Amino acid sequence: MRRRLAAAAVLLLSVAACSTPDADPGAVEVRQTPRGESAFVHVQNLDVITEWDPASSYSNEIIAFQNVYETLTMWNPVTAKAAPRLATSWVSSVDGRTWTFNLRPGVTFHTGRPLDAAAVKASVERTMKVGQGASYIWDAVQSIKADDPLTVTFTLKYPVPLDLVASSGYAAYVYDTKAAPDLRAWLSSGKDAGSGPYTIRSWQKGKQDELTLTAYDGYWGGWTGPHYRTVKYRVVPDLDRAWRMLMRGEASFVERLDPRLYARARTTPGVRTSRSPSFQTMMMLFNTAAGPTADVRVRRALQKAVDYRGIIKGLRGAGSPVSGIVPEGLPGHVPGREPRQDLPGATELLRQAGYGPGGRPLRLRLTYAEGDADEKLLATRLAATLKPLNVTLDATAMQWNAQWDLGKRRGQDIFVMYWWPDYADGYSWFGNVFHSQNPTVFNLTYLHDKETDELLDTLPRLTVTDKAGASRAFRQATARVLDRHAAAALPWVVTYQRAYLGGIQGYDDNPAYPDVVFVHDLRPVG
Figure 1: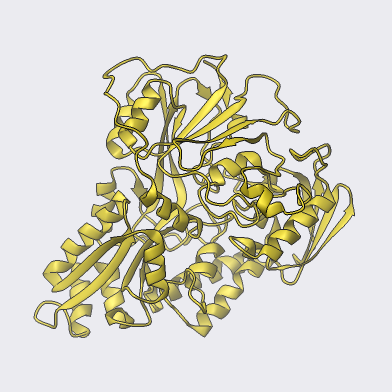
Figure 2 (figure 1 turned 30 degrees about the horizontal axis):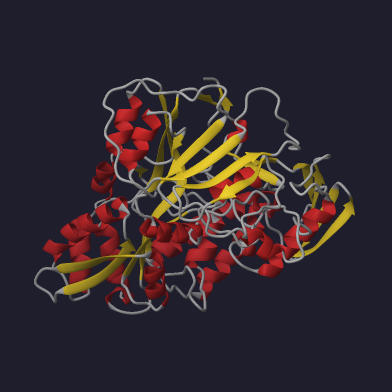
């Protein structure tokens, strides 16, 4: 979601091209990686590592960390449920306040120490104590008990879906807290304390070849059959250059392609493509506390003014309509709420507020992430739509830290950002973006409504104890945020578009882990 997304946005702005552009090789046969070269090369346009500590990691390093560290469970996009990972099974009490996990035997950390119940207890307790990143996912935990070496029990203060929490892409990692006396300093030097299939070989901060992982021979999943023994993460901001690297076999996987390159990839022999829906939503957050958007009529007018269909058409396959707040496929999704543009309705609401054609001119400030072409498209089209309505939109592209700092000071009328969940549940949007906060962190609408907060606070418990009641509560929460308060507009859900070498088998995009390739699952077939 977007503590991580926030950091990713910063990185997008700070990364510069690492070398001069390559000559276009033209229409050539794609070079596949020979079977003997077992390196998987993941190319993306952002730096990989911003935080080495698995307790506080909340940024783009997820793409590597999910290959180095593991969690108790893992979200399965087919069943839409938590699946075994380090835990082979689990059971919860009827009231959802006691959860017992049975651990996989024979698992060791890269340090050589066993991953047992005591290690699970120690890592979660340390993450809670550090209190950074997504550590809030453990807020319901009252105590943790290592019943025996392979059984660990969590007692909760209130019921939450702990099997989903334990699959979180952030803050749910199990790691060796005994790896070093000063663990944080030790990790910061580019070391790891994980149990996953790969361990850190080298890290070169700010370099194109930033991070290299190597196989951990003691991995519980084994290495029988063909596997990639090395994983390399290369930072290439220029998408055209990344495409040429793929064509030459210098890259195995390109995380993001623009519509032009994706169309080309689909017709290129030797290249596989993947297009899949995500859990990542674009959000326009309206300032409900100050300025002209403090008037709910102005906020409702803005909701109606957005050219949803036109923008999605302009994204050319990189986005799809969103219904409600939570994307389809997650608890909390509300069908039948796909937004539509209504310019007459927007004009009338502006008139009622004293603005619009023939009324007072209205000037609004919108901020978005510098370097994001899709956000720029949104800002440009919205400005063009609002101009005939006597509304001037001052759209400012900003580095994320500056945008976020301004937002926390309530310095804009419309705050544009992406959001996705820490774990596969809709509460992440409501609990982090629309719940009252003091000081402001990510509630950049500044919505402060006691009744809404009380409703939102019931969602984690209902998700466990009363799924029908949870569905009703999510619908009510969606209506309060979008209709009663008109706190936001959601123009689209991101559609991921990837390309990778045709000699790679076994790749699947799991939307709960954005941009992650689980490399151990791949099969290099040449």
